[in-house]
Image (tube, rainbow, N blue to C red; front, side):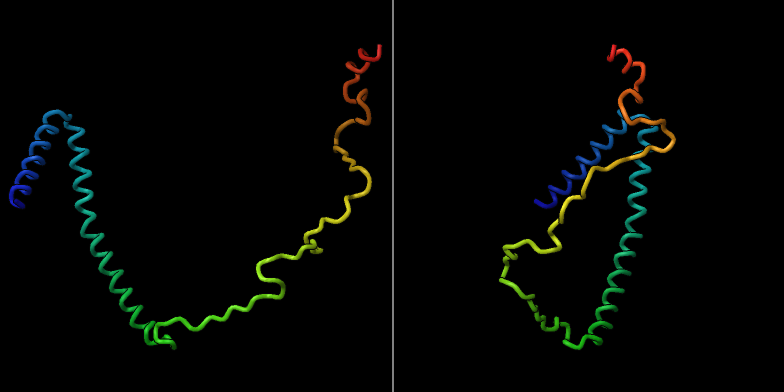
Length: 133
């Protein structure tokens, strides 16, 4: 059964390659071949990189195993909660959260380089003259 599946897979791939080869332009075939060659060229480099990283990890584990005082286990952890009720905040707002009183009086702005604009008549004098007539 396995032999039949392998033969059927090979026949399918060859048939697909023939059909694609007859219908594609030479430029498109060159692009596909370039992609396939690029992927195949990256496989050995990737395998070498994975092997080097595993070797480095093994060396790091060996060195770290000698340096750990607890033999690879975590030291005991003690959690100290702060004062107050468990999980509940204070029913009264704290000083840091209160905003305080609003500023007294209105804010005034002065645009540097602009003419006196204290009233609407100063901003639009021609419009203001038409409205007042």
